[in-house]
Image (cartoon, rainbow, N blue to C red; front, side, top):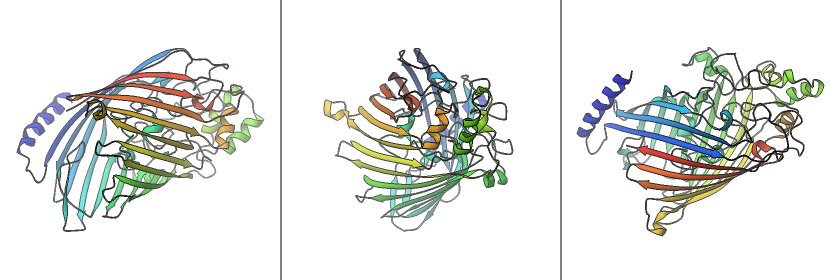
Length: 472
């Protein structure tokens, strides 16, 4: 397999030299990112549950390497292929924080480096105007002339966050802020597998006065799972029918070039999600740990029924009364470029109804974030950048009652009796410096978390990190 990939890389590297100026017919990029994080011991007046962030000091490292291969196909058609290798882990098995500290980690149960296909999709451009502009080349974007107004259809395997909730200021954890609630809208529980990818169909309409997007993607069988209802990595038509997510987004420019813009995003996610209210009724009558504790602690297999990551009381309710009902929500995002240095600020808020369990992203039902970045040009380092972001995360009353009753979700839960001060918003601040040198970006990072996983009896937590990203 490795020899085959090396041959493909060599082939594309040579062919790319013959690409025409008007259309970049082939493109090859490679990106590798290492993140090391450490938190010292922090104070806790209560014990730890199955999904608590350890209050003893921890140090963890993660890595993710992605090869980006792109080529033109037929007229106005493009093909993209991204094999990826990821390994390592986050603190406490990537549990214990709703706004988790490292966006390059996954909850896959194994720290060993794993090779998989992250993206494999086609993109078709349908012209709607004769006027054209040049689209700059980038990762998974071929440089070429494109119609000013156009319809773009994308089909295959990719992440919904590749297309939606795109925030220039804070979105990609391999190059911008690391915290989950700052890289994406925290309450956006979008359809995906545990690594954030899914099979989906997206349609994008680009007009001079607005941009509109719509997408539908398949959901995993279990929360944070890898497979669909047919127990396949490739979905069947019924998988899409029975567990899916839809999203639509409208972008309105406040300035003509979209450098000052407002986004409104509506989403709905469907699956075998259990009701928190139904689980709470059972927990009120039965105080046993057997229906609360997650068997075996952290999962070792996300492909089948060996571990469903949550308390048995919630797991047993999945798909019973109304198996494919889910949740709906909204994201509002404003982003503005400040000056010629490219400095930007953003404000983003998100909400979902929180009646049923969190399924794929994280356990946040409402979130408000803001931040921006300062160009290093202010201190004679024009390619450097200082990034800062703030987040406040919350959950619904039903979700809060479930945690206080000792229930566990797939990422948080401190256990029965460990919330003496109740549930309070999780508050996060992140400060990061991006030092760029040739093809490397070195980023010292600091995060401060108050009320980790909504529990004021634990913390605050200081998190120190260093990211090294290499791109070719």
